Every structure is written in structure tokens, then in C-alpha cells.
Amino acid sequence: MASVSYSQTMDDEYEKFIRRMNPPRVVIDNESCKNATVIQVDSANKHGILLEVVQVLTDLNLIITKAYICSDGGWFMDVFKVTDQDGNKITDEGVLDYIQKSLGPDSCFASSMRRSVGVVPGMDHTSIELIGSDRPGLLSEVSAVLTHLKCNVVNAEVWTHNTRAAAVMQVTDKETGAAITDPERLAMIKQLLCNVLKGSNKSREAKTVVSHGVTHTERRLHQMMFADRDYERTGHETLNERERPNVNVVNWCDKDYSVVTIRCKDRPKLLFDIICTLTDMQYVVFHGNVDAEGPEAHQEYCVRHVDGSSVKSDAERQRVIQCLEAAIERRVSEGLKLELCTTDRVGLLSDVTRIFRENSLTVTRAEVSTRAGKASNTFYVSDASGYPIDGKIIDSIRQTIGQTILRVKGCPEELNQTPQESPTRFLFGGLFKSRSFVNFGLVRSYS
Image 1 (tube, one colour):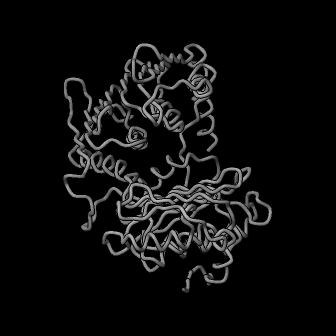
Image 2 (cartoon, one colour; image 1 turned 90 degrees about the horizontal axis):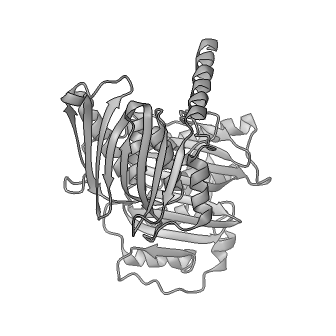
Image 3 (tube, helix red, strand yellow; image 1 turned 180 degrees about the vertical axis):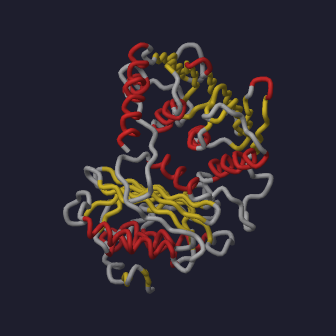
């Protein structure tokens, strides 16, 4: 263990020396392209640097429309064309300054986040990472357990893919509003959540294990689902061949590269998801070309494994294809999009998701955030039986929660979205306080 630590220290010191000798250079150009901001990054090369740069841009919710990548000869040179969410150039001085500081000579790129799954006490919250078999009502049951244990969910992201569900949830203590650090209480939280995740499925593992450190939520979700082998296809695939991403891998023997080509429908954060997966699979991108200016994204990468080899076998080739397909599909927004915005309170997520479950809706993806006492949550829901969602059910749910609190996005035209005064009973949770209970980790709800 000591030798490993010494080796890591020497690697870190060498990396710092290289950075001092060759500091990163960032050039931001708003003149040369009429419809995008051009960002050029030059730096000494290291494994994972492409992901770190893409992660900075993605975390700012910038849209990357084109990218040119080159990292041969120990030097990293990359050019991005980016816009904001509305397709405009980036003119906000605060954003431009942040990019310079995050990627320029004064930056300190974070080391690779190789974390285990678990409960992480932070400064102001406790992060809980969960993975298990997906089923209708799972998020409702997990939320009910946390409410019962006097935990308030302040931020969360939930992904489902190929019968598996993964979540990273940040919670605080109901009484103190601070992180939960008591070991016995953390052990109880893990035990009860693990019971819920296992459910009646004994064939696939559920995980809630302790780890330490700061986590990038979306990176962790990719790592967790990759480690869980969610890319392995089952016999119950819901994506037809026409909707499936077109991923191909061939060897360029003259250059000892493997060429990865990807064609699929474009969406936000697509580039991050692909680069994240290639990096976690220990592949290095030496050259790349990304074009996402239309409805379809075209990406091509010349890669080698970190050991210097190209793809060695057909089995490895198929695994790369499957993992990249899974990376693209995990964040695909299946189902009806519901946006909830209201005053935060303990049990809010539990109440909302229970109402979804009681109306036969299942959550396929969720983003939960809290800022200044306001909850802003996005849910993608579908019918638990696989049928189209009945507009009357959505109307009934919105009447219960509040028309102005829960809004429907991208919905069928027949759904009525006329704003009405929202019921105060939901805001204070009085209607729901005694309607669910937890017993040895199993949650039951009664209408």
C-alpha cells in the first residue's frame, strides 16, 4: 500500500512539473464563427483530459455543435464550437471567465473519480448511491424510506436502463438540515434501502456501500451502471433497430488505431456520455471529429487502449459497441416530461412519487434539485403497463398536486394545461402524512 501511495505521489509531482513547463492555453473566439463561440484548448496530454474539458463545458449546460480533437505526440489540442441552450453565442462574461479559469493555466483538473458505491458524508449533505433492479414504484419506495428515517432529499438524479435503476441522492437531516454523519444511522439507512432495492429479485445484486470523497453525479451514474453491466442486452429490449444508435468499430491497421463511428439522434450531453464511457473503459482518443449541427449527431474517434493496443478481438469490439449504445440510451428521455416547482419540504419527493405510483405511472428518469428553499424537479414518466398515458390520469394528478405546481412538457394536445389555483393541502403535506409506513425496509401505501 505504501509503495502504491509513493508511486501515485511521484506521478502527481511529475504531472505538476509538466503543467508548469507547459501550462494549458485557452482561446475563446466570438468573431470567427457567426453562429457559435469557438473554444480552443491546448495542453500537455494525459489520460482523461478530454473528459475533464468536456465535463466543464457540459456542466455549464453549453451545447457542443462541433469538436475537433487531436492528442498525438504528448500534446492535447482541441477545438469546440459551443452555444447556449437557445443556440446563441456565449457572451456572459461570468461564464467566459469561468471557462478560462477552469481550463486555463490556473486550473487544477480534478483527478479521475474512481469511487465505490456508497454513502458519502459531505460538508452540508450526505450522498447516497444506489443501484438495483428497476420496477414500477421503486423511487416512491426509496423516497418513503428516507422520509421515514427523517432524511430530506435536496438533490437527486435517477436513471433507468435495461431493467436496472441507479440513483445518486443528496440528503440532509430533517432536524438540523446538515449532513448525516452518525455511523449507526448511516448503517440503518443503507440496510433499509438495500432491502427495498433487492425487493423480490434475488438474481441481481443491489448495492449501497460506504465510500468517501466528492462525486460528479452524472459521471458516477455512468460508472455505476457500467460496473453493473447494464449494457448486456436482455430478451426484452424496448428500443427497436430504427431507434437504436448506430455504433461501429473497425481497426485501421496502418495506424494501429481502432476507429469508432457513432450516428444517432442528437441530444444535450451526448458527447459527455460517450467520452465518459470511452475513458472509463480505458480507451484514449487520439483524433476525433464531432458534428452535431443538425438533428442527428455524427462522431468519429481514433482510439487505442491505454496499453497502446487497438481492439484485439471481435468480442472486445462487440463489448465497445454495447457499452457505447448503453451510454447513449441511459439518458434518453423516454416518457412524458413533468416539471414540479414548489416550496421544498421533508417528504415532498415521497408524496409526489407515491401519487405517480397510485396512478400506475413509473418514473424512467428523474432530476431533483433544491435551491434557496425551492424544489425544482423533473420527472419522465410512462404507464407501468406499457400503454399510452391517459390524459385524464395526468389531469387528475395535476388537480391533486396543483395545476401551477406540476406542469406537463411535450404533452399530447388533448391534455388540459390551464393554470388553476393549487391546493394548499399538498404544499403542507397534511393529506399524506399518515398514509405510508416503513416496516423492516418494506414500504406499503394505502389509498
